[in-house]
Amino acid sequence: MAKFEFAKTDIEGIFVVQPTVFEDNRGYFMETYHEKEFKDAGYDLTFVQDNQAKSTKGVLRGLHLQVNYPQGKLVRVIKGEVFDVAVDLRANSPTYGKWFGTILSEENKKQLFIPPKFAHGYLVLSDEAEFVYKCTEFYNSEDESGIKWNDEDISIDWPLDDVEEVILSDKDKKWPSFKDSQIKYE
Image (cartoon, rainbow, N blue to C red; front, side, top):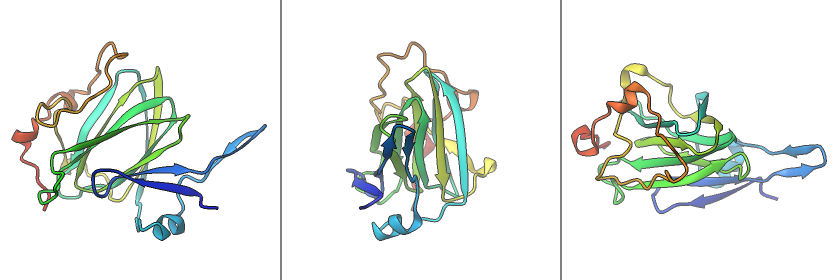
């Protein structure tokens, strides 16, 4: 029995991972990453850093990227629910400037892999959420950049119906538009 189901998306490189969950009267158990299983599925990844963030409803983190040392990320939610988004910034990609978004939650236990050379962000939909992710490159604060979360050219369809206020960090409020950022990874 496979431990994971891997589902490709409309954007090359992004995939959704559904782990096998073993549940009984004690609770549940699941593997969240298994190098051999991922390699056997065609995803040869090396992770160098794990991160965790806790946020309240309406917090929007993103759209984040690193310019010279882009990170691939395997993201999941261990508490609550978020809408997670990746934007393709690969110059020669047929989906350059396009986005993919999905709900990640403690209930669905889905994971999303976002390749390097993508911008990434998420919106917390539950009262509180804890978000964890593995990175393929170390975080470098001097290399950090971003794109405005509500950029008109990208037109992300954020699920804002039940969100009273979008809460941004000071840094996230200042990111340039997609056009002004001129970020195109070769």
